[in-house]
Image 1: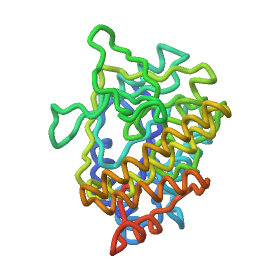
Image 2: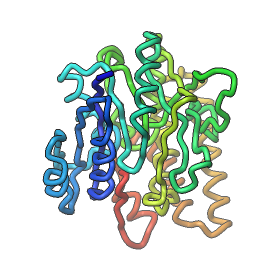
Image 3: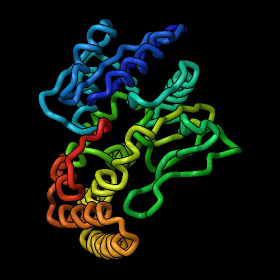
Length: 310
């Protein structure tokens, strides 16, 4: 069997991870993937190292950090223009075997109304620990990860799939558009899945397929940047998909929830996280979207650091 799939990998000052990810894919025997690496304005020697170590990939270099949404869009647009009907978004710190990608492709091929298919996602550092079996609506649930995979059917319908590893039907982008770059990071895949479902496509987890994700490298930013974008981006999602009354009620709920959360974090002496929540609330309510990394870190921390995942 010889199939072709486009793979989109983002890089930001993490050449080691990106090169290792590409080298793992290069050992596949049956698939013939074409890889686009989008460098999100790395400040180190990532571009030179990737170009030298992986000469067969297509390297797109951005002069600014476009975030997950913007960076992925550059690769997706290139793959669509090259005629690919299946596009795999893959984090550079995630691993999926050729066998499991073939399973995802077969699922997409068999069911024409499936627009998105993902694997069960496990922690690569604790390989028996399930991270998620898909996702839930981000404004109707506090905990958005589905934690229990189906044991009766190989295909589990879900409301969203993580962008860590997801196979997307190419026609989705022609019909509903690309990732919304106003999110910058987090919730953009839930948004795309929602638009796809409104257009009649299904979002499925293939419970036969597994992938693994290492979260160690970005763990120290989960108390600041991750919290900020999760809190703020809910307000983008509400604006887009809910009417006046339901939108008002959701705005009220998440504003109250954010205030309570920030007070709890202050009482537990987690001041950086409390400030991230507060700034996310302010920006979400005021409609200040897009990338805010350095501004958030300046507000939350004494020294500005940068996350390689953003």
